[in-house]
Length: 157
Image (cartoon, rainbow, N blue to C red):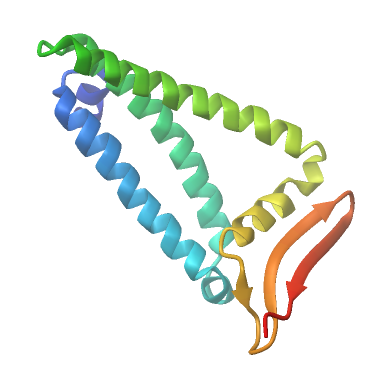
C-alpha cells in the first residue's frame, strides 16, 4: 500500500514508474487479456468469465487513471533531461485522453442500456474472430443492429 501512495505522489523515480508500472504492467495485462480472448469459449463453459472480464475492465480503467497521475507526478519530480519529463507528461495526457475517448465512443455505441452487456460480449467475441466453427465454416463477425443479432459466416474452401 505504501508503494501505491509513493507512486501516486510521484516519489518513485520516473524510470520505474514508466517502464515498470506503465509499460511492463500493460504488457502483462495485455497477455492476460489475450489468454482470456483466445480461450473464451472453453473458459465460459466452466467459470463465470463475464464477471471476471467486467471486473478486469473496471480495474484497467482505474489503473489507467492511477498510472497517468503517477506518471505526471513522477515527471514533476524528475531532475534529469527535461525531454524525458515532457514525454512522460505527454504519455500521461494521452492515457487520460484515450480514457475519455473510450467513454465518449462507448456512450454513442451503447444508447440502449439493456444492450450494453450484449454488446460488450459481442465486441469481446469479435476480437477472437475469424474462427473456424467446423471443418467447412468460418465465423467472421457477430453484430447487433437494433434488436437483431447477426452472424457473418463464410465457407473458405
